[in-house]
Length: 127
Figure 1 (tube, one colour):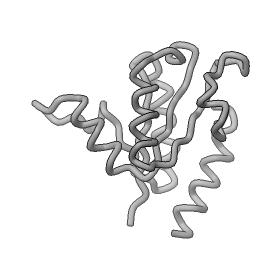
Figure 2 (figure 1 turned 30 degrees about the vertical axis):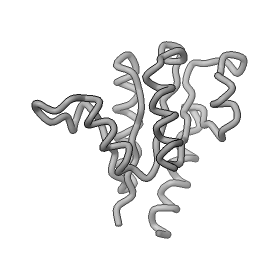
Figure 3 (figure 1 turned 120 degrees about the horizontal axis):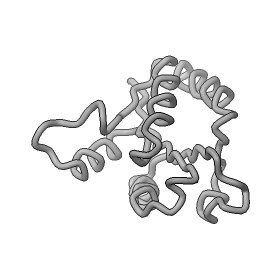
């Protein structure tokens, strides 16, 4: 069974999200992307909800431009409500600025992604 990841990001961070998606897809993981998988005539919210339900893991891309975005907070809540593994990836945000909910999780700094992706590849191959 294919492992699936949903990347939650804002439009301002779309280039970071694309880079992250490409790196994750490189190890054989399916990545849901609102931009790549949008279906004509379907609402974005409906698509996001479906992709969140189908994903095995949700990556929250947290940057200085998205730190106070209510949409990301909403997606974190939805992912927890669905029992998904939530992996925050932090870029350009100081330790003192990270929201308490993210501090409680095992978040990854963007420059440490290689280690996370190596571990992800091992998990996927072992499954």
